[in-house]
Length: 483
Ligand SMILES: Cc1cc2nc3c(=O)[nH]c(=O)nc-3n(C[C@H](O)[C@H](O)[C@H](O)COP(=O)(O)OP(=O)(O)OC[C@H]3O[C@@H](n4cnc5c(N)ncnc54)[C@H](O)[C@@H]3O)c2cc1C
Image 1: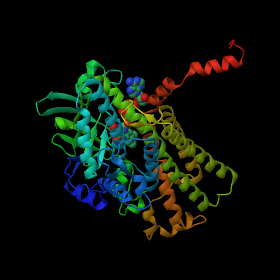
Image 2: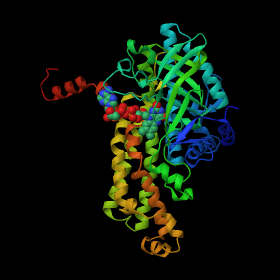
Image 3: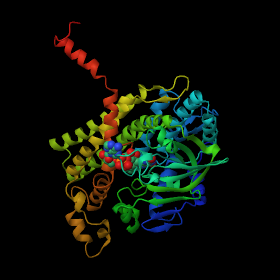
């Protein structure tokens, strides 16, 4: 059953029993809690799209391991065409769900680990690649929902993992046994990890020899003994818990991007699920390859999809207010489009300028410069898009009464009378709530930090740019060089 239906996934979720805490309370049933349910519904929608005639071609691929048709979410990129489809998949899914495709991070981790384990085996004579392939074959065949965990708590950022006062600030191996390893630590900001079948864990940074114990990668089933998920809690969480009808919310069904702090308290991992254990030099390579993919997908395609939704919402609001033909409003819409298309163009360029990494491996990665520029542009440009949409919708975007007032006999007539514009108040309030979710919520900071905070992209761009070549061009034309 290489392609599962949404119903298959939902059946699986009923069997998951992770130890999840949210708002200080244990969540016993992922499907009945309004917040965890939004994560499940989002992932179910991604499964649904995979079997939808309009999306099927983009969201499926041929496994390089079995030649079977599989979900692209569990596929390693093997060509430029794969890179283009991978990026396009993030765009189309983002447009459909307006939140995180919770399988996206693992998809990019699969490409990274496929290549890095290949390289390790070739250079070190280890057997990680065969092991990873066996794992991947199974995950692809079962069409498992996977998440990926890289971000460590990090403690004092000025110190390396082995220098931390508390050694658990980065996830590490605390025991090696004949049958496997025991790991301890945590991973932060884990998108959708509560409702997947498995989580793939990678190191969160480059490691030195002294950080050897922290150079670890493995796959772990959801809710394994020792794992605790502490879910994020934001005003949007409270709002969803309090809502009598999800239609009162900005993204009714799929919600905001839900993450959790995942604690690993002496979790046992059998050797057949371990893909790196102490090879410090390769930790940074796995991270860099993941980042290459993720800056094109999460930083490029996905956020172009989010921008489409904001632009569509802002244009709707303008039409509802009767200002769509006003020159400064049209200019603002065009400015939003400019940012969106620039990000998308960089993501496309990253894909088509991609190349095989580790010659002979058969694994393809996006162009690093274009991927980093896509992410950097969107981190900076998303705030501008938010600002422009906020300008168009007006102050009501942050002052609007509850949509419940529309059903309150004491206030309904007032709200309908004073909040109508060219359209009835109900319509104006709906699109305003939609835009509030995008512009007055979690998306600005989420876009900034997701796929790495901007300093990491600036460092990468500084490393990739050939300033000497540019200097030579300028100096030659200025007559400073003889030839
Ligand atoms: C919505 C969302 C979803 C996410 N999903 C996932 C996921 O599914 N899986 C996953 O693994 N991660 C996920 N992340 C984590 C994301 O990759 C990190 O947030 C990002 O890498 C930044 O790390 P941080 O949050 O720990 O911030 P920090 O790294 O603490 O950054 C805070 C500030 O400190 C600076 N800083 C930190 N260290 C140094 C240093 N050594 N030198 C100089 N400056 C430094 C940073 O540049 C930044 O300005 C997600 C994040 C968000 C916001």
